[in-house]
Amino acid sequence: MFRKGIGLDIGTTQTTVCSVEDGILLKEPTVAALDVDTNEVMEAGEAAIEMVNSSPDKMYLCWPVWDSVVKHAGVLAAVLRIFFRRAIGRTILRPQVMVAIPCDLTEAQSNAVEDAVLAAGASRVHLLEAPLCAALGAGLDFASPTGHFLVHVGASRTEAAMIFIGDMVTHMTVQTGGKQFDDAIIRYMRSKHRLYIGMRTAEQIKIRLTDLAADHEERKLDVKGRFVDTKVPRVVSLSSREMLGAVREPLSTVLDAIVSVVEQTGDDMRADIAGGGIVLTGGGVLTGMDQLLADVMGLRARVAANADTAVAEGAAIALERLGK
Image 1 (tube, one colour):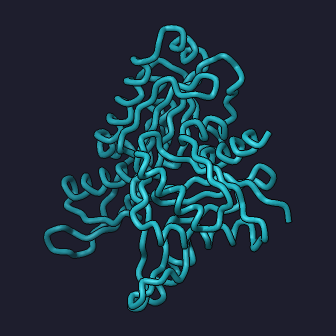
Image 2: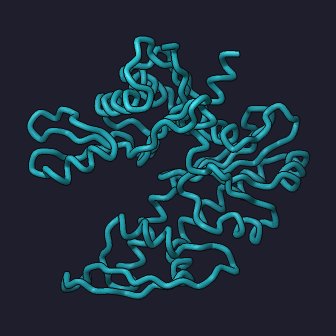
């Protein structure tokens, strides 16, 4: 089998593997099941979660990446080794890998990512900033002398970048993403309704109720949790309008970052933004965020059709272009 080139997006909560030829090869949680006695990695991804759920006294979960920074290098290497095997099978020739990384990683942090991917079985590793990967994956034209404004909302950070001929002219990163929206909903439920809910419930509320579009249809959802004072189960009815207030704080942080990049951009490229609008990618993009940006900033905005996988797809495209 010929050597395969793959794009890799290692997220705090999810890892995606892609190739230009075959598309998305794998999309699984960035998590490992470890033996409680030996700390050996027994499984990775969805299978790891199932293993721990079935044997909680023998296994525990370890998320080796936090806020896109490698916290457990050995565990991450083991997880990626399993993912590579699932994605491309067992091959004699080890794959070349293009890894999407955050804009603000230090050299030491970037080296840790590269070392983990090499230890997982890659023959060669290239690194490229996530906004550039996302832009390629979303189909933006790097050859055209026109500026493109891309906002990538990940699990734990948002990166806004003005891109011109394949390079970031200005960019800003804030430590706010999908997880911070979930945390805000959990805090709101405790303070407003005196109800404790877990992360999965918060994520479901975010997905089903949080719609930032001004003309969205009002929706309601009954949510079950535990009353903070008595720990007794309780059901509360929530509305989509109410959830706008719940996520206001982290949403303001994201909007401030976008405004800041616009303000740092020269007049010529501001004209490009006015013409081309804003492209949104990432699994943390909230429903209606494109319309909110249009209403607040007076700029056209759209969510990429492949928003959740654009980074990995763009990384694969970048690797292919590198070889030409």
